[in-house]
Image (cartoon, rainbow, N blue to C red; front, top):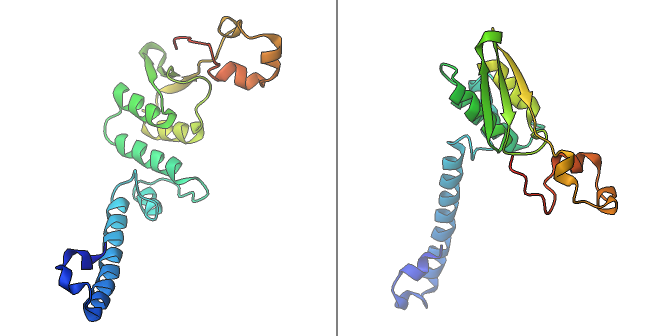
Length: 184
């Protein structure tokens, strides 16, 4: 911010005042950037420099090779996973990793529960970390299973062989294809 603009017009021609205000502007800009950066580091969803500290405090393995957004997801999931494990907690944690809607199906008679990804097709990108987090928060006597949704033949029957040949098998089974309005 140019502080000289905040002063009366008669200071515009004063070289000493322009120099002083220029120096003060640099200092206040640096302070503003520092404050903004400090505030960002106070929240797990916007931190970058302090991610390792958050991970250590929460007992998570520090892995600087992973992108910040994956590390932030894991921290948020761990924070939301504090306390008694409930169906809603598991659902929130799984949703935060998959960036889509999930269903949690309890099967108490068989000491298990199922996490079904219904908001996206295929396997979410960060399943390894999700599985680690779910293992940390779930009761030890319960088994967890994961279910994924893929396109079925009726979802892609409008594709010609030429259109299908232009895609990989994985793209056909786990991506939304133009014209497919399947309700997941």
